Length: 310
Image 1: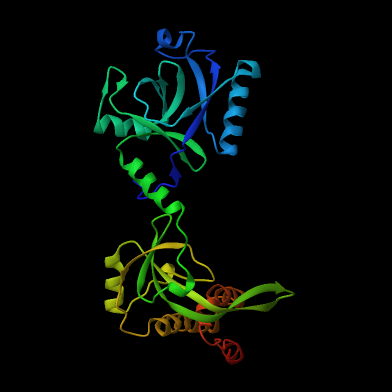
Image 2: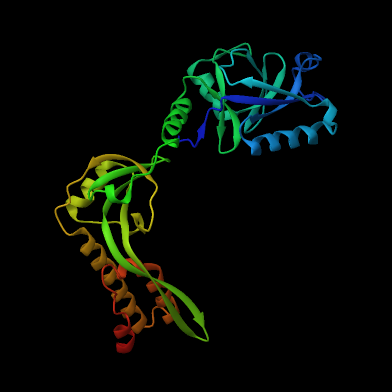
């Protein structure tokens, strides 16, 4: 289960309802009532969801005059019945009128936590806009809590560059965490390959930020203690997206020098592999380009002397 959801609860929702046409269901008696309408749902204040719902409803009925548009407050839905189940979704009926989709994972959550009584949900639901798709969410579920957490962050401003403190752990909108390791000046190589020759363009970056991504706070404590850094968790960036400051980690050694040394040693090994014909020169140039920001921390790595040696 994800520990974050990118979404929010709209203030108002829009139902685009069409008369139910062909019925392929075990619950033909319920769906045959004149009041039942196939319904597509939109967030009133989101143009994309409205255009999509309107397009789907027109595709379904082929007659705009049959589409009924209803705007409602996005309050808790209490009267909801399970009609049909499929592989990844099921069909439910809201207030004996709106025939809509429900994600199968939400159905399972309802069964496990609150149960269903002869097709009637004991749970209450609310519409959420999740990445531009309107979905029913069970009130009181972990999903609802995660959406509220995301909502609380939506209006936050990112932490200013000047306020970043070495050793502090920061969190972004997606609940991703990283420890700030410091500011560096570096150079990024932009490589082009022409006529069997590599051309390097240098992009100098002043006061870039180094972050180390972590899953758990215990990860960084273990790595710091052993002075081990995983290269695939490092990132050097001009800008960041962190919103919240969490705990602080004491770093009692020159971690930035260690990072540069780690990359330099790695690339030196690649030069040896080139000398021994284990890799091609073209491969090596791509390696230098990809790792250039780490190799050039605070002063440029003199890779040319290694090529001259070879």
